[in-house]
Structures are given as structure tokens and as C-alpha cells.
Image (cartoon, rainbow, N blue to C red):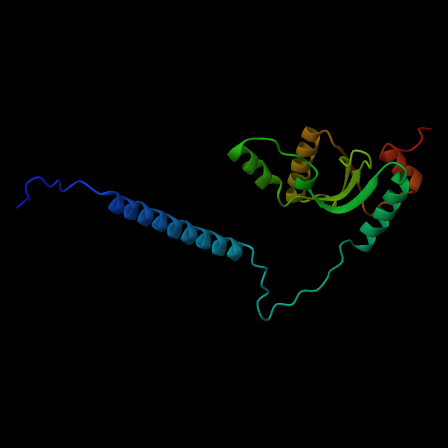
Length: 185
């Protein structure tokens, strides 16, 4: 039963202000709630690594005695030309420029590959040469595959690859010549 002359859909100014204020408060509460949720999930992602009980971590040698000797010889051979770094991940010396899945795929393929020694130009701060050590003779199939994959990536990036035999005795001048910084006789 409707009253004559009264519009049930008509709101006066006071009622309209209450609706607007109510919507504004509801929107503000919603925004605060969203901010609280996003900040709590962000802090959960930033948690530090937790070492479970019973796990012990200790430092370990980065290089073997043979690798350290070669590192020192390489450093002496190239000291006026390059900075020398040991045990460098392959992905850190190349820039993978591609879109989406292709970039992820390439990064996955090179993610766990490690370079024995990297020669970095001090001016450009870019890797110019990589030295890999031959593992054994005859090389195992997985070593051949690893070397071939690293070689393909370095070649595509324009980085020179030199392979050394760890059990061979090198002099500083020999290494300088092998690495292209020695005088040609």
C-alpha cells in the first residue's frame, strides 16, 4: 500500500550524504584491509633463511691445491690486462636478452654451469676470456656435454674460451701466450 504523492525512490539530501559517507567508509576499510594483507604477505616473502636443527654449515675450500696454483699463475700472466675470478656461474658473465619463456628457458639451461676462471677487463668490467680445466682423460660424457654447452654460450656472447690441463706444468710466459697477452716470439 503506497501513500499518494510519495515517491518511494526519492532520497532527500541528508539520506544521500549518509549513503556517500557510508560508501566512503566502506572503501577506506577495504583499502586498509588490502594494504594489511599485501604487507603481511610481503614480509613473509622477505623472511631470512632458517637453518633446521641438526644442520651444520662450515666453510669449504673454493679451489683445490692444483686449481689454486693455476689461479696464481694465470693471475701473474695477465695481471696488467685482466682481473681474474674463480668459480663464476655462467649466467653471471652473459646477458640473456629475450622475451618471456625463451629467456627463462635459456637461463634454466645455463643456471648450474660454473666457469673455472674468468678474465675480466678492468675498464669494461665484462668477461673477455674464460679458462676451463679439463677434468680427466678421457673425458666423461657429462663433461664433454658441459664443455660443449659452455662453449656454445660463450661463443654466442663473443667470449674467448681457453682449456687448460690441470696436471700440466705451465710457466707464466706460456700462460700469457696461451691467453693472448704474451709477446709473440
